Image 1 (tube, helix red, strand yellow):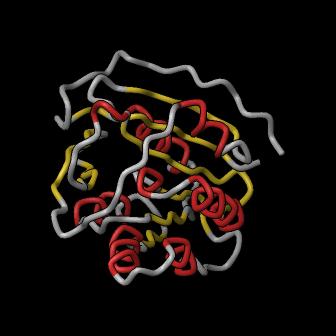
Image 2: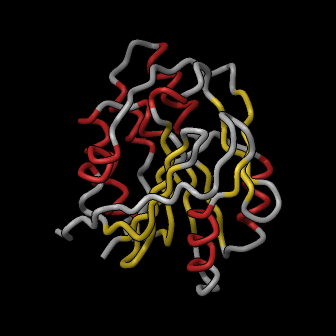
Length: 201
């Protein structure tokens, strides 16, 4: 198991809460992916046409599995939330990248532990995982998707059909939960968005 790197946060790129912001993590992530003409990425949703087009133009293949919608349906049926992870039944070592957005904010620590193991299995060696999470005092009450605009700018779109509880984890807890990965870069913005780019050995 890799020794986690202590993250160094960059506060220099800041926007007001839920305003557009320039994602330094996304820039670094894509700079690495662009070096691989056969790169494949798995996105865990919510499904956004803009994001599909954005990644599909740069990658060999872009896969979307809307785990937010599946988690919402599972909770409404009163089923254990861990059941939703069964949908991630892809062939091991299939992906060069996995996009989590703020999915972990809606799971408990045991569920995140299971998700981390699945992601580690699905990623190729040196594959990357992006983790986005809100700080507690900045988190919106409703679910919003992260929409990639031109360049590396990110905006938000309300997903009012989703009703999911939200959990809050400190930067240290997030780093510890993903200790199977090496932290490449971490950023925190004044709009409360935290971004982590991690890599599988």
